Image 1 (tube, one colour):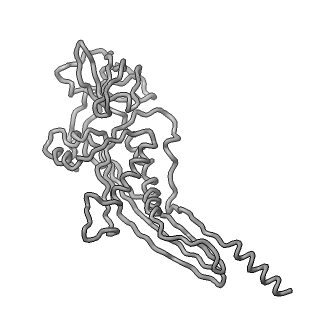
Image 2 (cartoon, one colour):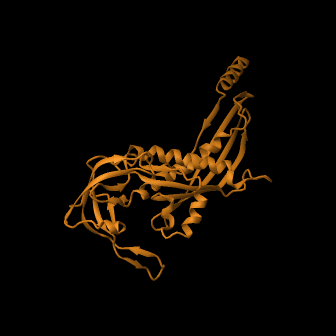
Image 3 (cartoon, helix red, strand yellow):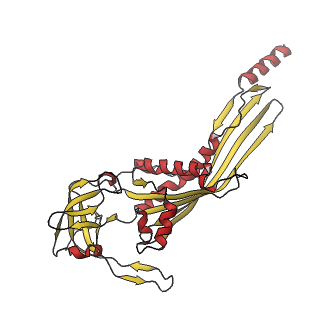
Length: 317
């Protein structure tokens, strides 16, 4: 009778043997912004670079400009930002030359052609195998941990408006009982999952920072034939949209930091979108009609800017 009970016990243990696969997050991922309501004019965002600052996978022939982990992180960040539907990503393969040009340009970082620029780096990355053995069972786990740092730069001012770090972990666990169970070889996809979880914790804050300020654009042309502003359909601009027109405020220097601060401008009227046109996000424009108490000086278009209207404010001019 004891032999029968022992055999039944061993059989139940063997049939319970299994392999487990899971992804764990060190810190909770915030709400997905793709589900947030409300219309937003898409901001143009350029991802400047994503570097690998760790020593992982760096051999004798390591090429910093073609680091696979850096490119992997850049692709993951681009996909998550695009999925939000609130930013317009711009390809900037020649960013190094653009940044060099910006140093000697009166327009500074504006030569990049974006509202914001993201600079990222992988600051921590590690892979380890851990195991635990018991009398009848044993477990083995592959664990990958990653940390990612992000800086968001306001192109119009050159200032870093957001900086943060996210951490993620991915794990694959196998378990055997009495020698029966699943076994797993080296899993390269754990790297993607750990980096993805780390980046996922930062995406919401990046988008919130990009949309904190009202969207802004400028006149391209103003005459009897046409009144044009930069921006078009790919950013979410539609026929009938109304934006405020303001004169640029005075610039003052902060004596503590030496940074130039532009004071709020004065509203002089509105523009209403009549038609959108253009082939690419970089070349899109919109035909508008201006309404206001004073006329626009066509010879000084750089003195004006067009801004998204806060729906809680009442227009008066």
